[in-house]
Length: 217
Image (cartoon, rainbow, N blue to C red; front, side, top):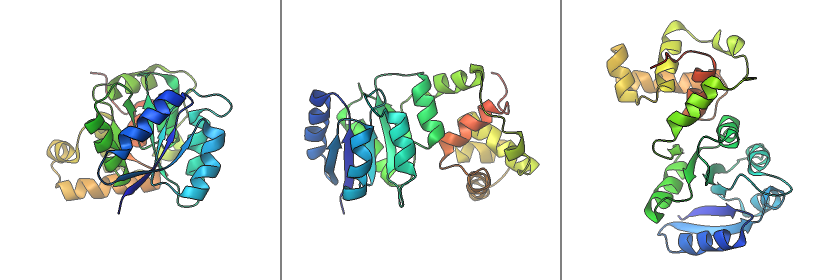
């Protein structure tokens, strides 16, 4: 079954180009397109996309607010931010809000297709080399949430795993560092996401940085 995609971008040339490009990808079907977040939410209710490709800077309702509204829908789509910005506050806020990942607009078509497939399968798609810049921004931002109460629900072992997720380590790398099996790490990560009410690993990494769990390099 094809992955159902909605494209949200206020620039008609970019939007139509993405629609045409995605139309050439095996297993991907564009079911709707929107010029801003105000259009995106009702279209998502009607067409029920699996993945929404979301621009961030748009008139009326921007991509961040649209992401929040989409993720409140019953059986919400996965949101994949497609942006020309890197360490932008809007990108960080969108990931914190639950977007499944972000990619830069200068990527190759195959990378976009792979990102959509990864997100549709429940994974996170992140632009190479940019995640570290975003996490460093999370370290330096003022007014970040106080996660003390949330973290109090975690065991010492879960906090150790969360700190390593914040460093960007894979389950295999965490298993080696903590002398655990990869299956045990997977269970830890799943439990952490549930206890902290997080949607994905990217949110967990951002929270770990904001909470000061990640040691400076």
